[in-house]
Image 1 (tube, one colour):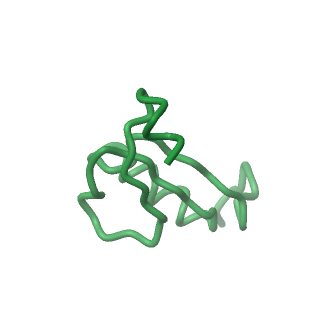
Image 2: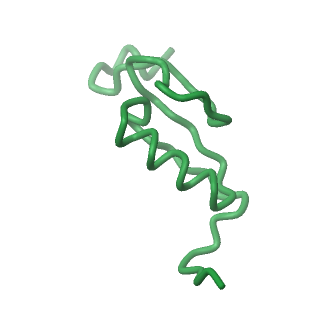
Length: 66
């Protein structure tokens, strides 16, 4: 039986840099635990995912205010 450390069902998770290899693994882990995941990155995810994706550069304030 799988040990549950946190209940992530219907929790909202924001991941910056979630489109690369490591980031996509983190996104999938949260999705597998039932979380709602939002990715903010400069490029589209490398793998197809059910997470919401927004293209933005978080280091530039004007990109965040769109």
